[in-house]
Image (cartoon, rainbow, N blue to C red; front, top):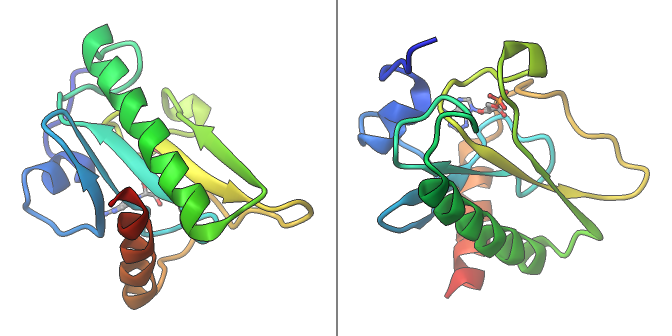
Amino acid sequence: MAYDPTNIFARILRGEIPCHKVYEDDQTLAFMDVMPQSEGHTLVVPKTPAENVFDLPPEALAATIRTVQKVAQAVKKAFDPPGVMIAQLNGAAAGQSVFHLHFHVVPRHSGRELSLHAGRMADPQQLAAQAERIRAQLG
Ligand code: AMP
């Protein structure tokens, strides 16, 4: 399937729709998931257009993973969860719903179920406050 430049993350990258930004550099952007599966659920995307892990050049993928680690460290410091899940889905059959490559950084707590994947919109004020907490840990 050809990359669709009208997908929601491409529009966020172009600044056409807002996001709760956590981190940005020349190759990547990180922002809060608007339908979080747990408090602090953050997404990391490459700026290079790519639908999935198979389409992104390795150098851009390496830059994306560097940001994933940086953001995961900040999420861990900000929310102090005992576990942090990092997930990345390729294809509708794998559950991918936005077709611009992204990594999920999801705080996990023993015995606490995750909210439904892309289930319910969070309160924007709460998301803004969570983004602020993560940014504070990124310095
Ligand atoms: P996936 O199913 O792996 O493609 O995940 C897509 C994720 O994007 C889901 O967790 C959604 O909650 C999230 N999402 C959808 N629209 C937006 C948006 N406008 N801003 C931030 N996250 C979004």
